[in-house]
Amino acid sequence: MKLNNESLKDNAFWEKAIITLPRFDREKMIANTKARPSWVHFGAGNIFRAFPAALMQQLLEQGHESTGIIVAEGYDGEIIDKSFAAFDDLTILVTLKSDGTTSKQVIASVASSLRMDTEYAALKEIFKAPSLQMASFTITEKGYSLQGRDGSLLPDAADDLKNGPAAPKSYLGRIAGLLYERFKNGAPALAMVSMDNCSHNGDILFGAMEAIAKGWCENGAADKSFLQYISDRNKVSFPWSMIDKITPRPDDSVRNMLASCGLEDMQGVVTSKNTYVAPFVNAEETQYLIIEDAFPNGRPALEKAGVMFTDRETVDRVEKMKVCTCLNPLHTSLAVFGCLLGYTRISEEMKDADLVKLIKGIGYIEGLPVVTDPGIIKPKDFLDQVINVRLPNPFMPDAPQRIAMDTSLKIPIRFGETLKEYKKRGKDLSSLKLIPLVFAGWLRYLLGIDDKGNTFEVSPDPQYETLAAHLQGIKPGTADSHFSKNLEPILSNPHYFGINLYDEGHLGEKVEELFTQMLTGPGAVRKTLANSVNMD
Image (cartoon, rainbow, N blue to C red; front, side):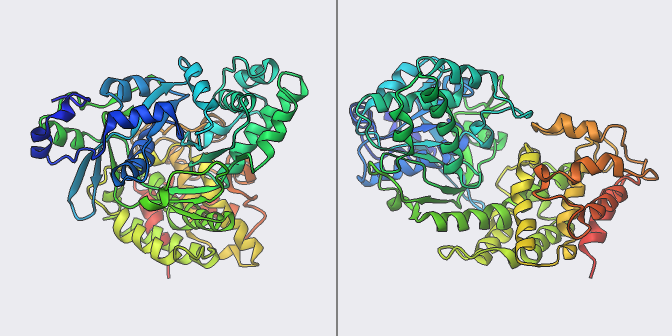
């Protein structure tokens, strides 16, 4: 049986496979959405299908909404071709629970899927619609950048600023062009909701839109009132949000399970842009989505599906709690040491006593003392759930290699904010032992040689070439050398750690010492880790 609109009519097959079908009139939903679109989402990856699309499915099934989501992809169009269009925009969501059970359902809330590069005109028509209430985004932190590593404008962005909104080429230029289309057609209100894991994500999205709008208004490519339109929060809002749901790449064990149910064409695909997609997504059961309640044109009743709406300050506290203390730093710690110690599953790492002590120390001992309680979620309870339930879940096929991607962009937030909070509160930075260990582990990881001396592929990172150049020539077994000249340009750079590590608590020197210890030979990473986490 293939996953498509026609196969959904065979109730007996899906019942036998124990896969829940959508409980709403999908054809009517698609027609309603076409007539009065309310929600467009940019970024057609796994997190979208496992979370926002599943939320809308709940609302449709409960009768709270009558329209679905239109999803658009602006970076990797193959996702649309191979994961949406080929399966009539349907997805199978497999929820992997910590007790070993699974639930499987067909997600059918996507009314249409569009490639931004070839179907931009269709998106323009959607953005003209007064009924449109929100455009949301899961495009990764990198997706919001107009500049390259050297600080200069990316070529497509530079062209867009010069040429105006008529035919933009960059992802963000096209988003701004859609807003300009809405502005020209009556300027109805809209919420632009980033759901990416970056601090103050709404401000980051607004900053990009503002920069483009200013450029267009200043060079006469756009009406000067356009900048005023996107800057008026009663017209266009950019709420902050915090999203949390672990959604690994599609796993072969899940594919095999679905194939055993009689489903065809469940194999995953790696696109030419290295995106891992399949007709299904696998995800954990736990999920959080907290959004600043700033929707000038109304919004779907997402609170009825478990989304928390609150004020900006509370979103900020929740985001900092999760990203800087209770989850993301633990993930990064497990990622770099997992790769060095030969692990391919996070859940397997959680059977390693040294690694468990590492993340408990980073969370409970070094992180919680400076976390701000957001009020709506208790930090210790959140951390308890992460350590005792979420990370050890043996049925979650999450890999340290996936989490290790873009670590240079993650460390200044996941750890740097904690360091700055220590400074702000006058706490002794020299008391930190495990956060410097993770920094040293990350640098050791960048060598691409594991603790047994085997080479491995370092996960993609936009700063890798720069970092690797500083570390050039360093290999395990060269611990008699002094690496200050190699490490100083990295450890002194606030771009990587939020602060100059040599300025506070001798952290730079600590990292140098720990890094050197990890180079003495095979097993040195394990020995350094064990010594550090078992110190009284």
